[in-house]
Amino acid sequence: MTRGYSRWVALFCLTLGACASRKEASEPKPAPAQQQPAPAPQAAPEPTKENPAMAATLDCVLSVPPSVRAGEPVELRFQLTNRTAQPLYVLTWRTPLEGVRGKDFRITREGTEVLFQGPMVKRGNPQADQYVTLAPGASVDAKIDLSQAYEMKHPGRYRIEFRGDLMDVAEKQADVPRSLDQLQSRPVSCPAVETTITAP
Image (cartoon, rainbow, N blue to C red; front, side, top):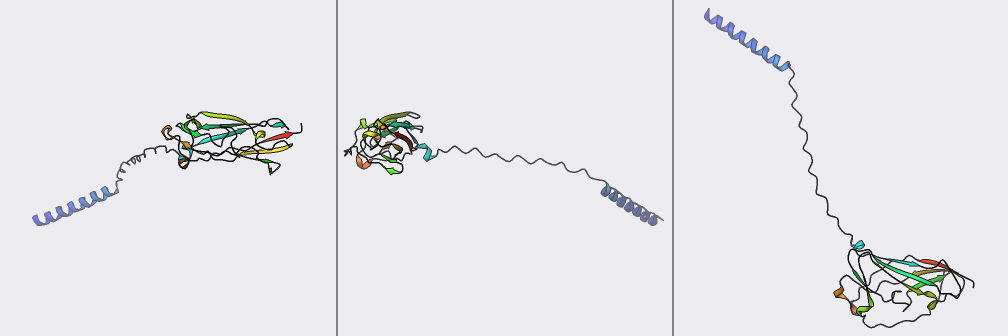
């Protein structure tokens, strides 16, 4: 009697356990809380790098009257501007900043190159007073009469181009003047200009 009762109790307990397990399995479990992904670390901004080409920019501008009567002066204005963040020391040789001392322009009339008739100067080492100082953002300009050095008496359309590099540009005042074998030329782009010479 006792043994049979014990078996019946054991069977009843097993049945209850199975039911409980089934119920537990059938009940929906709360979804685990979703964690927001941590924000990705932001990279530090790259330091602004100065473009070496831009760091050494000198702007050149030419201007002439739109028209001139034959036999009158053909006045050209040459302007040089320092676009860098530091002073520059520019040798004036072979630029209008020293006047006309060589064939520094290519001038054509209706596509044909005109004759240069000006002086050709031989040079020794430059002197300190032959350099011009350009502060950051500053400009220097000069005017010359092209008709004193080029054959510009004939009517027609003339195109004028500055053909040379700057013969020496220094970034430190202590470096100037430099001897001929130490000069450091620097290209400069001057957009060409045009003028019309009319009959007198």
